[in-house]
Length: 362
Image 1 (cartoon, rainbow, N blue to C red):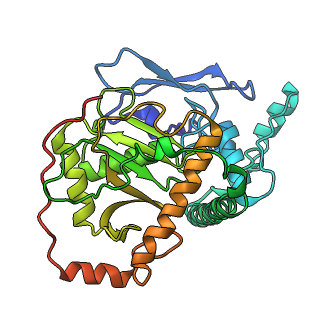
Image 2 (cartoon, rainbow, N blue to C red):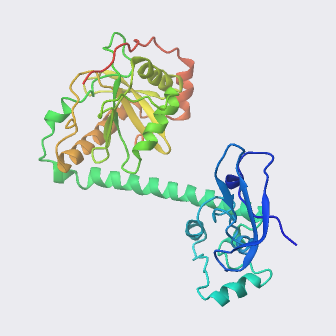
Image 3 (cartoon, helix red, strand yellow):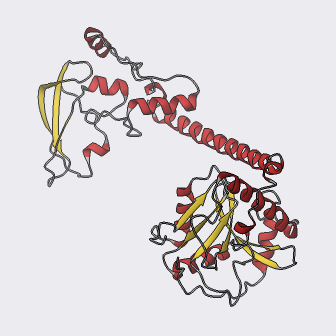
């Protein structure tokens, strides 16, 4: 008597009616070498590829894997990766140990009810266990994120306070004077641009996450200019630049920050009030200002590690200095806008912003 094959949705495809052919004892199992009823079929009527079962149902059931692709039935990943992932969550070793002796392989598969071969099978064998496991995974990820954020914040403060003296003699005046630090995100009659300067970029924040966040704001995954320097992030200098493909996307980016209330005002040493955009990604707040001048190059943030670190320290001190103006409504250490600040902003009418109308040329 043949049992139904254990096949994942990926292998079955999306067809509602699949013609599956059974060949009694038509193949040997790739794991236990015992013969089993072979099944073969096509994903869809137009496909020329024939998919076959290569494992017996007993081996697939013991390991909770597909008879065709040998991947986990729930997450569709190899057994080794599944076991490693669950080992990280459960904090003890979980491995699927395969027998090497041919007679032992056959003995284990013929042993009814043996669910111990698949190291992770006991943890994901039913819906209730799986739900508990998924919740534990979410909790673990949250703890790891929180731990990473705390650790990175301590490292930044350590560099700012302890190592600043080591770079006191490094002159980066030629770098600072070329940065658009005196520009404001929303400034009437300002020169339009498609390039923006980002700073306060944490060293743990991946470049692709910045890319994804901007794509969400402008609703376009291909927002970048085709130039090689359309997006340049220097984690050692904790800053970078982005350049949009056209002026419409640049304008949409600015308006997206404004409509979300992610704009803060700060005060320079000269008393001038400037506006900075806040690009929020996970736990981090990146400051955004337009890069008006046509002076950006690959060396705009320095030529060596010492200059990068000195620039990072300088920008950090700049944030602390500028945020004093918003001390009552903004988190001084991270630049996060508080609830009170958001409410006060929502009551005020936004000033008309000068439209960004021309592309940036390198």
